[in-house]
Image (tube, rainbow, N blue to C red):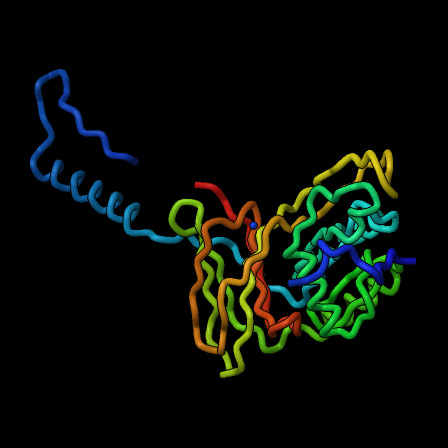
Length: 275
């Protein structure tokens, strides 16, 4: 059973070594040759520090992307969140939680819901020909969708998505750039119509919230791989391209996707370390 919204409130309609040189007490000093070598080493180390513009992260390429649209105001969603948590632990799977404000009008405002997430769910509804929007909903690599209330069905659909893979996926790398900014590189591939490049910040969690009103009154709800921001960085047409964004922490995902909620072409993620 899923929570379904056929009529939505207006606000939900579609349109984040150092070298130390010293003089010994005896008065003896280092030789000129020794000092020269030490100075050269110091210059080399400093040059490396100042010329490195990006630090590569361990980027994980995936075979499938599964997105959970959930709500703190849906009584079926806490269980669906736990299912997403199990998917998040699987290899070569990018599992993301996107809370939507679909049930806010029932008395509890979802503390993590964003309009951008609602717009993304709306795009999938149109592309996948879903009548209305509902929670908890799972979307698999932008190609199929289903309810997260049926765990057996959800497992089977994820297995199908992994088996199909992302065969045309370009190489993707994620690097820490200046300050807290992130640099994303998408490699070359066959020339194609423009695809969207999404940069997504998420927190692996678990992150818990205590709900005091609505369908989940007096319950503590946990979220896994909670998306905190999603931003379209630009277009990819098959030519190698680089994109940079101000911040994408503590984990960063990149999705290359056909426009308007279409199929996902490639995806990867990385934990963004602080330096």
